[in-house]
Length: 153
Image 1 (spheres, rainbow, N blue to C red):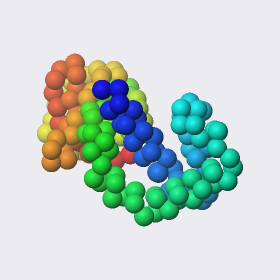
Image 2 (tube, helix red, strand yellow):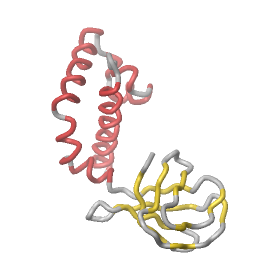
Image 3 (cartoon, rainbow, N blue to C red):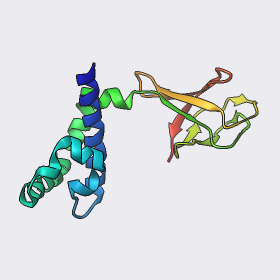
Image 4 (spheres, rainbow, N blue to C red):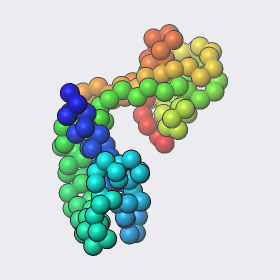
């Protein structure tokens, strides 16, 4: 179990590093990783030349292989299918057709249905799951009501 968690954690760190590296002009793994990640990985013990070699590999890897691995890696698939638990930020009055919800985690989701549901709450907790077809469903934990949603931000 611990080995699986380490692999999943490493995959998550690698995904974040890849996304940041793609956006950066000159990615440096020392900037991309937290202090704890640097210490745990041992990268801090490498010479500047060795770190530069890793940085070059990171650029080459993200340009050539990252997309394919992100689509097929079982570890990445498991992370991307994990439920999202958060809370709607502020007043919630249900949904009526296309309704947007900003979550406390910063994500913005929008309903993909014309259904209506009226319920008032402040900061209600939600869980968003993804089914085998890739459709996301947001459930209000207090009431159990759910609706299909899509990520917009």
